Image 1: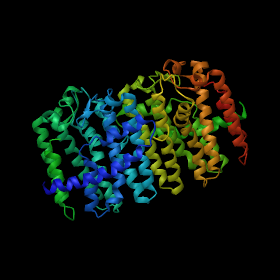
Image 2: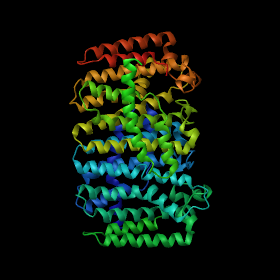
Image 3: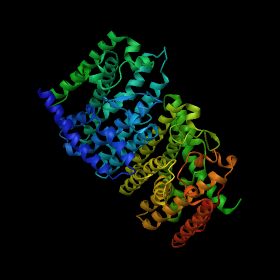
Length: 293
Length: 293
């Protein structure tokens, strides 16, 4: 196992421990179908890239990992709610997520709708508890909420819908979708440790999150064309089928890859300007570019 | 106009002013369809009973109304999101709400899903800003979040679904649904002023909210049988059609009304134990029992 994989898995394992402890508390949630549908999507896996980013930047900025555990938990719940709602029939109508049936395929659309609502609400319940710890915790919670909301992820999802089958989808439209739908929720785990550390590198890390989020979404789009269902755990070719406004649709596959390379370089350059051991962060950026899932 | 109506309308008008100011800020939200769908459901009307309750109890406990404005706003956004999602095809499939087409009938199911998500998120964005004002504001925000969440309203909605067409739906099941689906979000505006005032009458007001919430839901069920579409602004007879577990289904119409009367008496009794001028609160309780919309 490479040093990179070891460190990545270490962060992911820490998070999975936190998540499993939290899921155990959900056993008391009634009715049982609600409890099960919440836990199903939380436990289904995924790379846990947002929690890994949160711990990575906490370490870089000397913020104790205990301080960000609940922020990582809340953020992953927000990410998971968005996937449940995105997969629903009226949205992307995806039957698979991470190689398993989507929440609505297992529990039905009504229960999936409530599971999504429930995870979003529970994320904020966790964050209100954090708010009691001090003003920087309130700022961090508020930052996550803004990234997820109507000037963040939800705006991006809405624009994504709006430009389905839009042959005139422009570079500007694409930029709006990518920045909001994806980059905001990738920026959150990078900037939350900065807020908790007294805003060290606040603007640099916002910019890094923005570029890394764009990179993450472009590679997602490339994988939707070139990826392997078995590795990816979700249907392939869905973007084209749904007429989505993606980097591949707007620029073509070749230019999308070149743009991914440019974004990778920008991320690496910002990272090199940060004090401390940034080797893992650089590997993580490369991983986002070269991943197969 | 009666004194009761005058006071009710005064509170409602104050709230509508707050709401309209907030909606004006949503004009900058993009894409336009998101901005419009959020504002459509917020502005569509309704009795604004939760904001009216919030101001009523703020006045009783000598909490300045300015202090609860944003809590009333957030609560009404949470209530509105729950109506948008409840009306969706996979849930109650209601084409009308407050006499107008439901959000999904106007904007489509995918946009309605996002409008609901957006309002829930925006409610919490408003509440995180409140958290900066002090620890009692954090407690009040956290209380609202818990009332709305998986141990509150969402649990009630889930149980409501679970017991559709359940001929064995018991009094206990009904109690769980009513307490969570409805009473928690009626308790919130009564208890938030108590929290902001240093927890005066905390347990009494929790109990009052519980009984008033049950009363509100029973009268809703009665109106679904005996109400007038024009006054009510939503379809009639939907509960029976959908096989819902309601007080009318479990106890029959006659006993449901007797139970509503008992709950009215309990609410009035608690109210009489509170210091100050409670005449409006007593009228409000009677209004909840005798309303036609």
